[in-house]
Image (cartoon, rainbow, N blue to C red):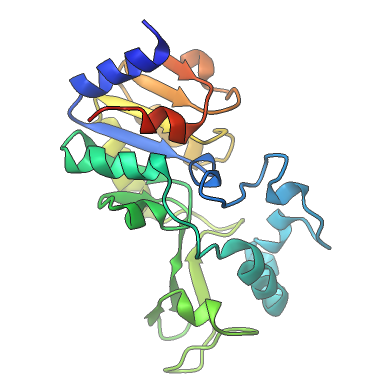
Length: 240
């Protein structure tokens, strides 16, 4: 039996699959990740992306932060790929119970997924740091300079988790409950080196841990099935 055939059999036999994904899920939609050859870490900026995308930098150099953020973090023309679409299809079929994602692009929801735990937030939500009013991505994308709240004039911040910031506790708890209750966990498109997010797969207690990633990960030895291939190709080939 090939790895793909094994994956198909497990999917067909499961009723509470959880998918845990990272940047590799969205690279096939044209959104660059951080660590690949073409990723943000390999592009040339005055400061490295992890510095610009930090809480300290946002606070001290807010205008420069937004220049980078609008240029590199808002990929609003991107569309869901085969992986996003298949996961939404599996949810509609009653086989997949949740998606846990490190991505902030909203492509899972655009594909039709309903139960999505966004560990690092979303570019589509933005809030005033003074009056806490929420705004869509248009306020950021269509503006220039530092975005201000139309209601009170306060600074508007993307609802994304920057370096030096903690994850939202309610989101983490929801993700942990979903993973702990899964009869199959599919991990895809992530190098599993970003913590604390990567540590959440430790809560899975089943024996159908599947890793789908182009490159090896630190968890390959612990997985029950490993497939080194395109996440879109592998998931797209699953029959529901």
